[in-house]
Image 1: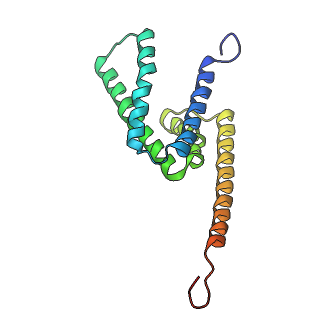
Image 2: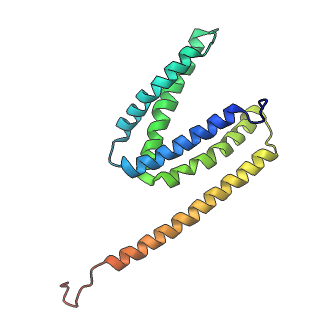
Image 3: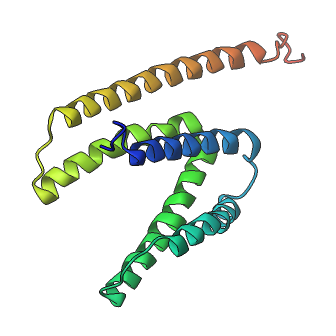
Length: 168
């Protein structure tokens, strides 16, 4: 915690989550026909500008160049290229609301993996997060089921009426 009671990292994480969510909705609404590879390349090129500025302004020390190159290469290939491309493709395929449920699942998976791999036992905060994430997924599933049912009813209503002989 900072001296003011709220850690700045939390504020930056909330800002990043809002930006990612708003970007997903924007993409679904205005960029549905754009190829996800082109969209991913454009986003990575634009994100390079503030990332380079922060890298230049942030002091650092390098102890093992080979490990640093592997870590940065892995982050660029796996996160910036593969993960963003999959995220954009999923939005084009399933819609922003369905893909947003990943944000409810990721912390739960991270908590379980940290328990299995690092031996960090889940605490009460993790349990509350798991319950809240499960509730969010349940709400989304119910809402999308109702939308599908309503769309199915509207499709049935829009079918043309035919006469006995088959002519409309």
